[in-house]
Length: 511
Image 1 (cartoon, rainbow, N blue to C red):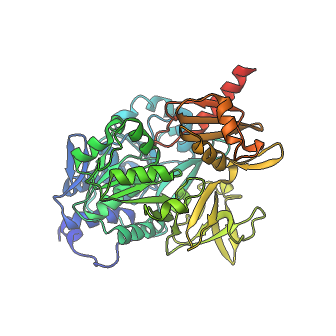
Image 2 (cartoon, rainbow, N blue to C red):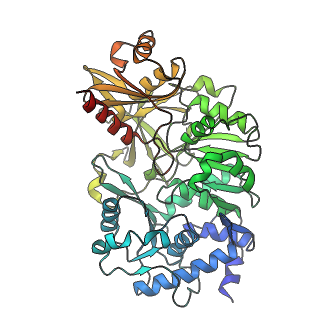
Image 3 (cartoon, rainbow, N blue to C red):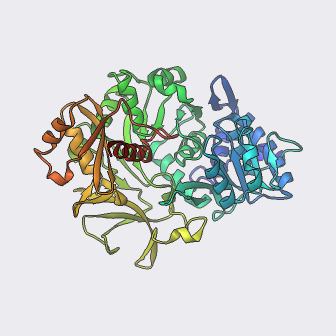
């Protein structure tokens, strides 16, 4: 029987397959000629993208001299990149996304840690490849398919690694996170059960491929037979137009995009009527941002997703309700909601023991990765309780009446000012209460608080006086800087390290 026809045979209607590429094959079975991917004016059907992936998978397998273990992907969000993610899975390998615009030192560290058997590239990688030659050594570098395609995809085992992503450690050294096929399969089962996406859904892709949230867009779209639309950076200045032009029905981004759309005066009521889901993740979602976005997307369910890479994309969710959600916000931040049904959580106190209502969120279950690429990185990130291994998120949360969780801030965002322990999230909430302040970020530097804020520019003395009406003096920053917008990183998240560097420069200039 022709391998393509074998793929079209149903494998059961109730349970999805257990490997990440099999979620694409669900879409392939649903509609081979449906639109799988749209990048600018380029469009590929499921049949076409599948054929490209098989062709690349054959080349990867030949270059590695057999089934590759890991495939590096140094590419922008191009057709070659998306086909490459599928091709690595089809070849039975873990894909390691790398960003051509990342600093060369960081990419070199990732390559040294992941040790890919083959590196797959596109045109965007050409300028940076010479600087990576020493780390790559004799690793084959592939640009185009060269040779016979793979006859049919390899079937990885549930405990094989699907992809490896890198997060920054406290020292800035990238930490590799190997996500297993069973981890991401458990997550996608929850997603497709909750949202019931259809082939008529059109999904935005706002995240870079090195960020785990990009996996949601791809395999939520492809698992339902829907269309994935890659959003270029320039389109963020015209978000409602982009959504209307492409008929987007499922929006997923960091919350910082809301502030940008508002600043451009595009967050008007009913501005984005095509959306039926608006999902936000990656940083705290503010209550007033959720309310404004809900007004602009009246037919959309607005949800706040939460979760670190180590727990596979997201592990809890809160659906915004204009009637009840504002009263459940803590420090102006939307709750992170309820933990997925297949997961368990506990709150840990400063001593690592279970706490009752407030503590560090620790989670276990099928979405939790076994550990880091370098086992040395596991220290302090996992704990054992009741004979089970739990991941320590580093996030402080509070249990709300009804069982939902409220986000209080990062454990490492607890600072001491003159001996008093302070939550930076609380300082930011206080700043947002001040007249004319739309948003704020607080930074602590050697026992001194710096405040960066958006909105109406006001004298520092005025802000300090207003904060003093409801804060003790230890929570009142001594230095302030008004900004037109916060710096954003590649995934449109507020770049806190850049603000910390700015605070250091301000202090140096004042000396």
